[in-house]
Length: 587
Image 1 (spheres, helix red, strand yellow):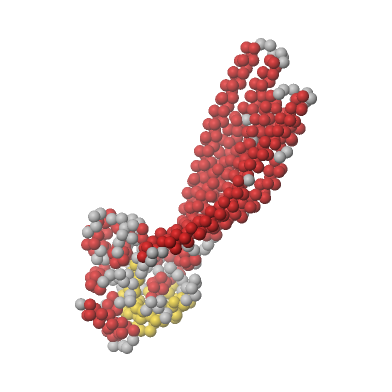
Image 2: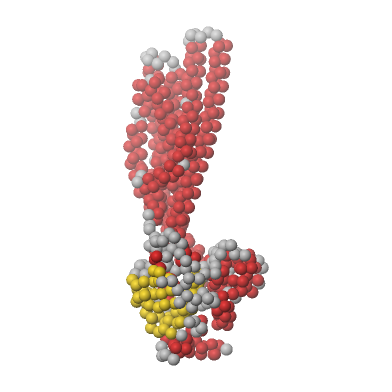
């Protein structure tokens, strides 16, 4: 139960509902437990008439009718308060589920990129959906039925004890066996529940990856392979679930058996006491039988509730693993920072934690406010790493990164990122309209601002050719748009935020050179006076930059303007001449 202690704060938050639910449960059971006593009194009246202790039939009839009305009234009131109990406690569990999902989602947003490299999307989704659902059952049905059982047990056993202690002891004799059985079965269920949840995460991850990469699956015609892979996981998961439910299936037969034994003991022991004159009225035996049968469902529910609690324990343990994770990128400054745009790297070295690849080695450069820096280099040379470090998606291992002369760690993280318009290499669009995808850069942007940003990104004409224009739904990850269109929508999203710093990470790789020229001309105007970082594999994209650096294996091997680099033998001159020759050949 250690993992479930984390949830105590929710009990405190909704303590008013919880206390009200307990009070309503007590009232409901008080009315319900009037029924056995009324039935006992009715049987006693009939017995007294049969034994001639009461001779007036009309008195017997009136007493029976009155008892019947009392029984109906008690049943109705018990049902009404049971309804209120469910409304109070089940609604409380839904409110807690809402809070817990929001807390997990907020935690996911706070965690750094390294966390997402170590964990699969399917597992993340499973913990916020399936695992939280298991925990909700603990807050709702488990607590409701547990309180229901406890209240019923306390009141019913108290009444039984006051009537006949010997008969009560015999009736409750099977309960220690029940407790021991629950203990051992709970341990088995706990272990098997953990395995079931692990396989559910694997299934979710497998399905999510298959659907996300469905174009690759179809292109390589590997539907059979992916289907077999999923089937293997599904069958293993099925076997683990069957193993779990076999253990759970032992509960109810065991409960029914023990309750049946209690009924037999009541009938036999009570019958012998009645014969021997130790019990004066036959109604007592009937009352005890009703009490035992009223306890049947709560006792039977013990198994189900125990199973719920065990599964919730496993699920909350999995949730806690992520809730206890600390983001590696921490905001060390609460006060908002004013960002102007000057960027400086001083002997910066960075190694990726997951691959242990040293992406940057003693990198130093300075980009003045309002100027443009271009970065070229082969794949894996460290270009995108510089962009990620500027946005503080990672922290440098050594050296220092300064923005406006202040160490980047000493800036408010939200202020820093809000001042940056980042267009990543892999343009990601949400499953929403084109307008809303652009509006992510500025949620208060007007239609005119959206259209202006689209024109600057040279995507406006394409959008206007769509039947729904800016209200066109782009599908999951922008699947309905081409690679070049997604990149240009992503550029428009960055421009509309009007940031102090713009980072273009090879964001024109999917457009042709002619379109690239037009976009670059538009960007030259849109980025006027803004600090701009352009990362590209095309020399034509960066020739107009104020400063150009060339990376090779994480080091700066060339630095200067276009004209300066063109008179130096090296990568820049070679790649520019090669791409110029290819352009002339194509034309």
